[in-house]
Image 1 (tube, rainbow, N blue to C red):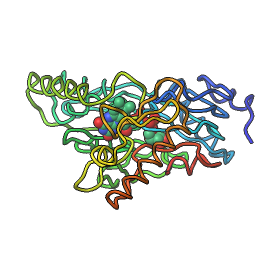
Image 2 (tube, rainbow, N blue to C red):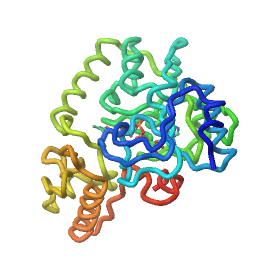
Image 3 (spheres, protein in one colour):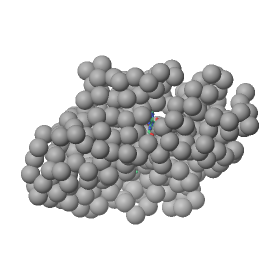
Image 4 (cartoon, rainbow, N blue to C red):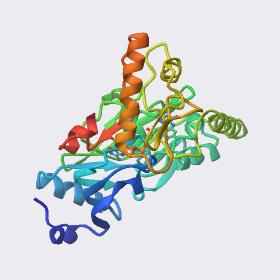
Length: 306
Ligand SMILES: Cc1cc2nc3c(=O)[nH]c(=O)nc-3n(C[C@H](O)[C@H](O)[C@H](O)COP(=O)(O)OP(=O)(O)OC[C@H]3O[C@@H](n4cnc5c(N)ncnc54)[C@H](O)[C@@H]3O)c2cc1C
């Protein structure tokens, strides 16, 4: 059990009880968190995580909420939002250090402005460094782990510097468990500034042409099965444009589900289950979710690894 007056003694950031999470997810979907915390700074992050761990109180971390579906019942436990703090980025030569709350957009811009190459293709990913490392986010042939050197994290209350070689990364997957990512270092090759600026521009235009960027969504819902594309399989199953309540399989890109404004997590789950069932019937392929389901179980820990 946790107590608000106790938390306020060690925590200077924003704290709210029963805060609706739809405000903090890209999908604009999600019920209330029992406790919702926005740390003021790094010390606050360390203190609040330490407090919840000591009390054995379940908590989960949110970045920009761009790769999650939060249930309509919300989260039993606490949500610590790092999307608005831990936002410093600096460079020493070709090495860039970014805190976990730095957006990918800002990180890429920081690198591109210095003519550093290797991350320009990630520019349109709407999350944070922390969320991108958990997901091993990637696009157009690049992944956030490509030029990673090390990650600073909180592991059971202890701040640790973990080398890339000690972490496993694969397609949209990382080997982190319950660690809280505080920041990361990347060493990037020197490139030509005009060239990387142009690549970023071209790929952002391509993204806008092919993805439904004008409606709330959560990016690709499913991972691409080996040698295939989830979007193609869903389209072949005749599901493009299918609607349940306020949620719809995008007309523009079948691996995206869009929110028409009043979609519930239940509507989205209906479409997820329909796509899984039809694709399996058609092709014998089990689609695996890329989006993380949060709060679909009593335990937030389970949600995190779902
Ligand atoms: C329009 C759109 C386009 C997208 N395009 C792409 C794309 O091209 N490629 C791609 O890979 N993804 C894409 N995504 C998905 C998403 O943006 C990425 O996965 C992103 O990196 C998630 O970052 P986030 O900060 O939003 O994480 P969140 O969604 O907030 O969290 C994701 C997971 O990471 C955990 N987490 C977040 N921060 C931390 C931290 N500091 N410490 C520990 N755990 C943490 C959360 O608990 C959760 O399990 C897209 C999404 C949208 C909406």
